[in-house]
Image (cartoon, rainbow, N blue to C red; front, side, top):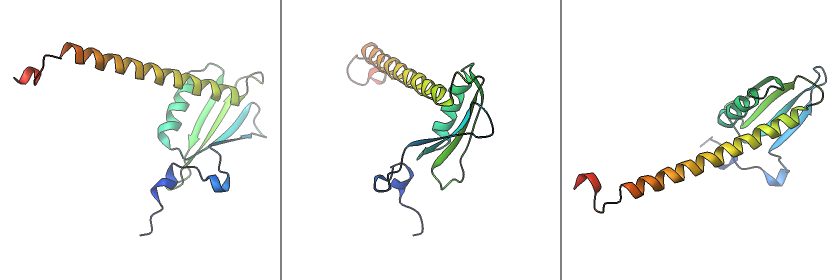
Length: 128
């Protein structure tokens, strides 16, 4: 078959020293840069974009995926001032998303434990 191996869409190529994320400062627009995120797609890119847009220091953020079979995202970020760099706001956004994910896991685990405790009547519960 002519399809690429599935693992190539999410595993970094360590033999070629492939990096997860690279940064290139923009030479024409001040306080801007382009991040290339390897082995990701719209799912992660849109989450990060939306989190970045919540930051009042961010002037612009957008991303493209070059082709559906090329597993990378190019994300451009521009900030309002030269005091805050695009690298800093991206790092803050990733930390915020990590905190939200931890909170979601905790709340879900607690809700499942509560449901199990309330519905632990033995047998098949309401279907007896």
